[in-house]
Length: 150
Image (cartoon, rainbow, N blue to C red):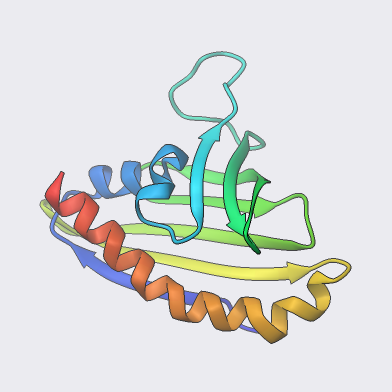
Protein backbone atom coordinates (compact mmCIF):
# COMPACT_ATOMS: atom_id res chain seq x y z
CA UNK A 1 0.00 0.00 0.00
CA UNK A 2 1.05 3.59 -0.55
CA UNK A 3 2.24 5.67 2.40
CA UNK A 4 -0.07 8.24 3.99
CA UNK A 5 1.18 11.69 2.97
CA UNK A 6 0.14 14.98 4.58
CA UNK A 7 1.37 18.43 3.56
CA UNK A 8 1.02 21.93 5.00
CA UNK A 9 2.46 25.33 4.25
CA UNK A 10 3.81 27.01 7.37
CA UNK A 11 4.63 30.69 7.85
CA UNK A 12 8.13 30.08 9.20
CA UNK A 13 11.59 29.50 7.69
CA UNK A 14 12.56 25.94 6.78
CA UNK A 15 15.13 25.63 9.59
CA UNK A 16 12.51 26.44 12.24
CA UNK A 17 9.96 24.05 10.73
CA UNK A 18 12.56 21.28 10.54
CA UNK A 19 13.61 21.65 14.18
CA UNK A 20 10.03 21.55 15.48
CA UNK A 21 8.89 18.69 13.24
CA UNK A 22 11.84 16.44 14.10
CA UNK A 23 12.31 17.08 17.84
CA UNK A 24 10.85 14.08 19.70
CA UNK A 25 10.56 16.13 22.91
CA UNK A 26 7.89 18.19 21.08
CA UNK A 27 5.94 15.25 19.63
CA UNK A 28 3.50 15.20 22.57
CA UNK A 29 2.48 18.76 21.71
CA UNK A 30 1.24 17.85 18.25
CA UNK A 31 0.89 14.08 17.84
CA UNK A 32 -2.21 12.39 19.19
CA UNK A 33 -1.35 9.62 21.63
CA UNK A 34 2.26 10.65 22.29
CA UNK A 35 3.09 11.31 25.93
CA UNK A 36 6.87 11.78 25.75
CA UNK A 37 9.81 11.43 23.40
CA UNK A 38 13.57 11.77 23.17
CA UNK A 39 16.59 10.84 21.10
CA UNK A 40 19.31 8.83 22.78
CA UNK A 41 22.41 10.88 23.46
CA UNK A 42 24.86 10.93 20.60
CA UNK A 43 28.22 9.41 21.53
CA UNK A 44 30.22 12.41 20.39
CA UNK A 45 27.76 15.03 21.67
CA UNK A 46 27.08 16.50 18.23
CA UNK A 47 23.96 18.56 17.71
CA UNK A 48 22.96 16.66 14.56
CA UNK A 49 22.33 13.06 15.55
CA UNK A 50 23.92 10.43 13.32
CA UNK A 51 21.99 7.83 11.36
CA UNK A 52 21.29 4.92 13.68
CA UNK A 53 20.44 7.09 16.70
CA UNK A 54 17.51 5.63 18.66
CA UNK A 55 14.32 7.62 19.14
CA UNK A 56 12.12 6.52 22.03
CA UNK A 57 8.55 7.75 22.31
CA UNK A 58 6.02 6.83 24.94
CA UNK A 59 2.63 6.35 23.31
CA UNK A 60 -0.80 5.72 24.71
CA UNK A 61 -1.88 2.50 22.97
CA UNK A 62 -5.00 0.63 23.99
CA UNK A 63 -5.25 2.51 27.29
CA UNK A 64 -1.66 1.74 28.27
CA UNK A 65 1.53 3.78 28.05
CA UNK A 66 4.12 1.93 25.99
CA UNK A 67 7.64 2.84 24.87
CA UNK A 68 8.19 2.59 21.12
CA UNK A 69 11.72 2.55 19.69
CA UNK A 70 12.65 3.79 16.23
CA UNK A 71 15.96 4.34 14.51
CA UNK A 72 17.03 7.43 12.59
CA UNK A 73 17.46 6.33 8.97
CA UNK A 74 18.45 9.61 7.34
CA UNK A 75 18.95 13.25 8.25
CA UNK A 76 19.88 16.27 6.16
CA UNK A 77 18.92 19.43 8.10
CA UNK A 78 16.92 21.48 7.38
CA UNK A 79 15.48 19.38 4.55
CA UNK A 80 14.92 15.67 5.29
CA UNK A 81 14.67 13.30 8.24
CA UNK A 82 13.41 9.77 8.64
CA UNK A 83 12.71 7.11 11.25
CA UNK A 84 11.87 3.40 11.10
CA UNK A 85 10.29 1.45 13.94
CA UNK A 86 12.42 -1.33 15.37
CA UNK A 87 10.13 -3.00 17.90
CA UNK A 88 6.55 -3.92 18.60
CA UNK A 89 3.82 -5.42 16.47
CA UNK A 90 3.22 -2.17 14.52
CA UNK A 91 6.27 -0.37 13.14
CA UNK A 92 6.04 3.02 11.51
CA UNK A 93 8.28 4.41 8.81
CA UNK A 94 8.20 8.21 8.90
CA UNK A 95 9.76 10.59 6.41
CA UNK A 96 9.81 14.38 6.84
CA UNK A 97 10.54 16.77 4.00
CA UNK A 98 10.80 20.55 4.49
CA UNK A 99 10.97 22.74 1.39
CA UNK A 100 11.45 26.51 1.52
CA UNK A 101 8.72 28.34 -0.39
CA UNK A 102 10.16 31.77 0.47
CA UNK A 103 12.67 32.93 3.10
CA UNK A 104 9.86 32.97 5.69
CA UNK A 105 7.47 30.25 4.45
CA UNK A 106 7.97 26.49 4.10
CA UNK A 107 6.16 23.42 2.84
CA UNK A 108 6.19 20.49 5.25
CA UNK A 109 5.40 16.99 4.01
CA UNK A 110 5.15 14.05 6.38
CA UNK A 111 4.85 10.57 4.94
CA UNK A 112 4.05 7.58 7.14
CA UNK A 113 3.71 3.90 6.41
CA UNK A 114 3.34 0.85 8.62
CA UNK A 115 4.44 -2.76 8.72
CA UNK A 116 2.83 -5.32 10.95
CA UNK A 117 4.55 -8.08 12.87
CA UNK A 118 2.59 -10.83 14.64
CA UNK A 119 -0.84 -9.42 15.54
CA UNK A 120 0.21 -6.19 13.81
CA UNK A 121 -0.21 -7.94 10.43
CA UNK A 122 -3.95 -7.94 11.13
CA UNK A 123 -4.15 -4.55 12.88
CA UNK A 124 -2.31 -2.47 10.27
CA UNK A 125 -4.83 -2.95 7.44
CA UNK A 126 -7.91 -3.15 9.70
CA UNK A 127 -7.30 -0.21 12.07
CA UNK A 128 -3.90 1.45 12.03
CA UNK A 129 -3.89 2.86 8.50
CA UNK A 130 -7.48 4.14 8.84
CA UNK A 131 -6.67 5.89 12.14
CA UNK A 132 -3.47 7.38 10.73
CA UNK A 133 -5.37 8.77 7.72
CA UNK A 134 -7.75 10.47 10.14
CA UNK A 135 -5.10 11.69 12.61
CA UNK A 136 -2.38 12.95 10.26
CA UNK A 137 -4.27 16.07 9.06
CA UNK A 138 -5.12 16.87 12.70
CA UNK A 139 -1.50 16.29 13.78
CA UNK A 140 0.00 18.43 11.03
CA UNK A 141 -2.53 21.22 11.76
CA UNK A 142 -1.49 21.10 15.44
CA UNK A 143 2.19 21.23 14.42
CA UNK A 144 1.51 24.22 12.14
CA UNK A 145 -0.19 26.06 15.05
CA UNK A 146 2.70 25.18 17.39
CA UNK A 147 5.33 26.47 14.96
CA UNK A 148 3.50 29.61 13.90
CA UNK A 149 2.69 30.68 17.47
CA UNK A 150 6.12 30.01 18.97
